[in-house]
Amino acid sequence: MTRKDQAFELFSQGKTLSDPEVLDLGLKKKTLGSYYREWGKPQAEVAPAEIVSVPAAPVEVQLGSLKTATLFELKGERYRIGEKTPECIVCYRLRFFDTGPLEIDKMWRVDQTISLATFTMVKPIKK
Image (cartoon, rainbow, N blue to C red; front, top):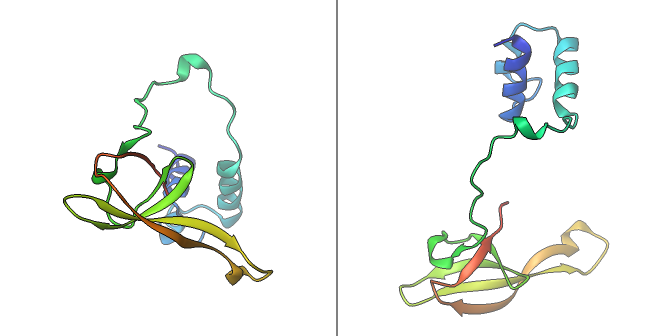
């Protein structure tokens, strides 16, 4: 593996130009900067013969399989799991409020509390 490949791998792991692992590659700062810019550019499309099929993650999962505080979508609305009991799961419907020009005036807030069955199918939202 070349040092360029190693740098790209570190960038993919979230490392930046100033991280010790990147600096330990022994490359000049100018070279690292050009590698970082090259790594961040959109890649050319891959030819269909080079595509490896990977099974898709399930789009919907049972609500009971998610952890407390997980965000999920149900019928176009955004919710957060509040409390889990054996009979049901208490969830908070979230709405985005934009009440003014300041950043603090723009946030997701609890709009309604509901209870759902543990077997309800929902779409998890990744943060």
